[in-house]
Image 1 (cartoon, rainbow, N blue to C red):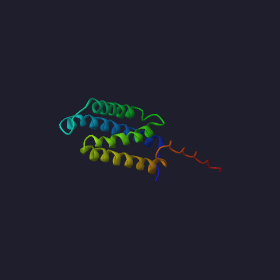
Image 2: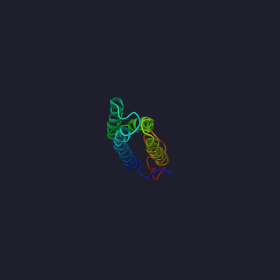
Image 3: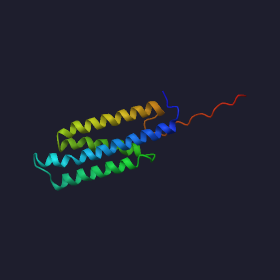
Image 4: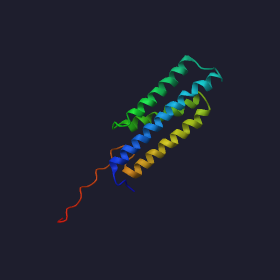
Length: 130
């Protein structure tokens, strides 16, 4: 199945990708509170990593209009999932976000024919004499 208007579908899916990345960034901002009360606590390195990851996720949401924005967002799913090393519950939260991201890529593939590339250009309409 392909979208009747690939350009419109591309814009919509880019908006969804940006929203997911923004939500991921917000979720990462909740992690410091959780790890401050457990284990070795909140060290400067852990806090720096989490804040940097949150900022990069939000910024990646802003570059979804660019051709490689989806690749950047996909690459950021790995450090998001690895926040589970800091707080056990982030394995679940990060896993849910990774599953949402994979679903988004699958929908994009079904609608546009490619998970990462630009939508295939629609063939020009045939003229009546052809």
